[in-house]
Image (cartoon, rainbow, N blue to C red; front, side, top):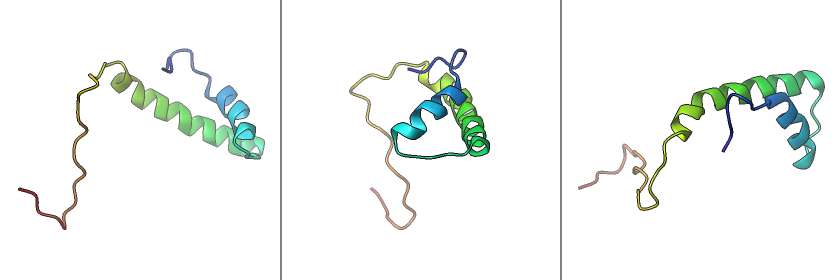
Amino acid sequence: MIDAKTFDPAAYVAAMAPAVGLTLPPERQARVAAALALVVKIGAPALEHAVAEDVEPAPVFDPGVSRP
């Protein structure tokens, strides 16, 4: 799990972009890192809670399908 306090999004982007075949100019890397930092900040509280393996995910809402 990612520790939001010590996570370095710029280093992560710099390391992972070439690993997945992306060539990002420095200004683009900075924008991707900023977005990733926000995702980690928003998601960290949710990831702090354990979820039992038997928990089922919520169904996807589809307004065109009626469910009983």
